[in-house]
Image 1 (cartoon, helix red, strand yellow):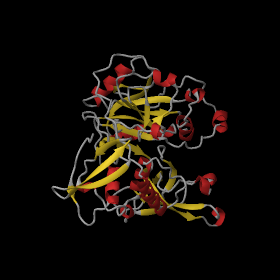
Image 2: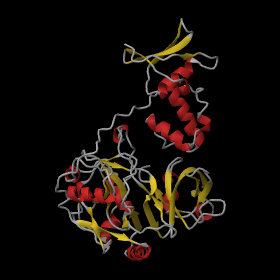
Image 3: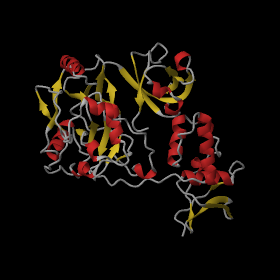
Image 4: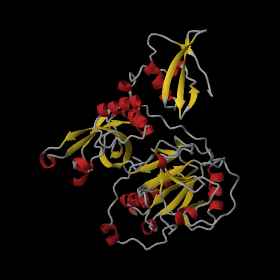
Amino acid sequence: MPTAISFFPVGSSVTLQNLVNAAHYNGLCGTVQSGADPQSSRQEVAIDVDGEKKVLAIKPANLRPFNDDVLSMSIKELLSELADYNISTDTMKDKSSLQEAVIAARKDGWRRPTKRKSVLKTPPPPPAAAASAAASSAASDECDIGKFSSGYNSGKKRTASDASDSKPSKKAKVNASDTHQGSLPELALAKKWDESMNVKGYYLSEKLDGMRCLWDGLGNLYSRNHNIIHAPSYFTQALPTGIALDGELFVGRGEFQECMSIVKQTKPDEQDWRRVTFFCFDAPSIAGGFDTRLQAVKEALANTDTSIAIARVGKDHLLEEFARVRNQNGEGIVLRKVNVPYRGKRTSDLLKYKEFMDAEATVVGYQDGKGKHSGRMGALICQMLDTVRAEFKVRSGFSDDEREWENTPSIGSTITYRYYELTNDGKPRHPVFVRVRPDE
């Protein structure tokens, strides 16, 4: 039986292909038929899905001239639609190939996956629970950022030979089943701190260079983009249920690539994971300010070792602690505003301070190498993620292997780069490649 009925005026520009396109955009696929309502001369769309006839409720605004929008779509939008269709873009090297793939996918009748309703609810304050994970401590007058416990890192300590023998694994393709289809909390993202900002009353902790992650309180770890992290069962079973946790999977200072090679395994190696520590920063599903959320974290992880000491600081203290962290080969520091609720977006509630500015950009092309880099990639042509979308080139920061064409970041991927400042025309000065964003 039909689940919904919708009529709309039939104009000369509305074709059956328009209706097919609108059906796909509304998350349905199947045999699409159209017919006129004799009383009003208006048209409906009937869709046969698995043998059951459904009449689609479509708003006229959803009727787009078929594929006319593709030419005006950004690379991000093209990649997003292809991801919805579960189509790999690894072999697509320019924007036109992405456009062709979107057009082909629409014609073939791929459907956009529908979202499930969230199963994550705001829990009551959790009871004390043992968990072999690292947690933030209560605020104090002293700040001991440099103290790290073993936490989950209960295996053998890494040595220099361990680091030299280990190689990052190849990037695993993300399957549809590896991406959460429901509604998870978005993670809070940090703005950059500068000396004009008053940080009195903020909490301070070391900025870790690992994999940002979300524990959903239901047995699953997710990346920042809500892709599943395949952690071994011993690791997830030790985390508390009933509370979502914002944290970081961390191996050690200067060990980002080693950390990524472990946590992105589709078949987790338990021995490798013994080197990984989960550091908890916050509790997104708990209402109230950071003090309240921090207390909930402490209760949930009551029997864990202290991993990061957090203190209320002013600007002078911030610079002192930053210098100490850098002397210990740390990446930088993060500051959290106290009396505000958790907000899953980029705000000044969360600030970061590093020696160099960093940012992210989309790869839109390549420049051939010259001289010693002849026959390889010379530079990435990138597009800034701000509203201006200015293009610039990243020429340095690549290893010889990363310059080989088969290893270069793919078109449409997001990279992290470092720079000293912005030029007068808003482009980064001396950009240096750091890495492809882990969730890419």
